[in-house]
Length: 249
Image 1: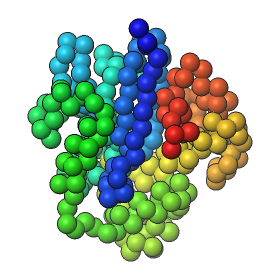
Image 2: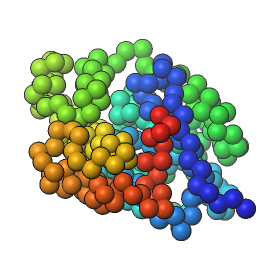
Image 3: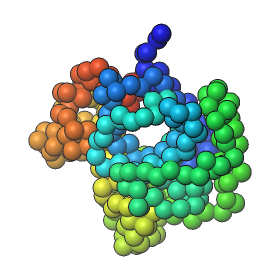
């Protein structure tokens, strides 16, 4: 029996790119893998089959610290949402599930356990559902806000954002705290951390982005991954699953 971890990532159609970062598949995760999930600035909707063959749908909020992925669910399909989807696709706030999650009704989006039989079919069906939920109009300030912070890998000040999108700094932070449970600055730190991972994977253990100095770089990497850049680069036993897919993107 093959117990090799199977981790697959599929990017969405361009028409969904504002709302969906990717679709992922994870199979054969066991307690022996000691897998670690690290913050990536996304909100995950997970569809899985439990050990007693029950269908489960879970919504995971943003992460601000690493966590072990050991759980009873070892195989799942998921949708990784960009923050804009929280208000406009999911139509809720995830502030109350920062660093945690919650179980949704098993009839959510009218999917069922049979939809976990084929990943490509799952991606198509969920894409169609998301298409149907996209509103005709959204607050363009919010779309531009995320376009700017993603393009800058989080290395942009709230003052500069406020000036470019004509939205007050107080209102921007209120929006982040209301919908996501953290400040804009904290979210931007996560994006900068994520942008550092490809460099670390290549063995570049000095800061390639706008960290104050090497000490600050190491401190931020440890805060968000739990280990030093050197340990992250080694990625012993493929513990950090997100590092496995950078060569696929």
